[in-house]
Length: 193
Image 1: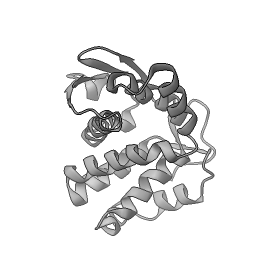
Image 2: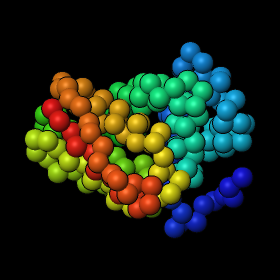
Image 3: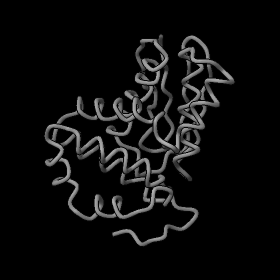
Image 4: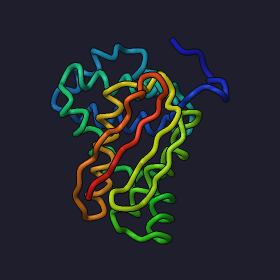
């Protein structure tokens, strides 16, 4: 098991993000199977952590992978989308949402800016995220840590981006471009709407 506290240089998520993800797992019809697949240690450590504590970034990937393995990729999509729809009501994301919508507006392409900004609030040493607004809008991810270089993470991010479009009243599809993803942690999401 991971030692605590984590070193400043270690990739990490805020515990509040992992708590939200576990909450969605518990809301799934067979969330018990996901928890069984994860084992007891990771959920127990997440539940015991303070909301602003830093926890291993790989645990997010572990949760998504457990969902995919036990319930199928479709449930990864559902969990990630549900998490996005509830995120604006969470204290960690409320100031971000207010700031982005007041400064840029609620147009779908503009609201996608929250994706990169949310990464800065909720993760550290977990890659660089940027959004180039246009038609299509490009979401660049560079240097994702090895613990997240998984298909389950990519599937979740596609759903996060599509749910962000829906929050803005839009619809679209997301294409993944990242031939060297496993080796470099670099991937682009092309958002068509």
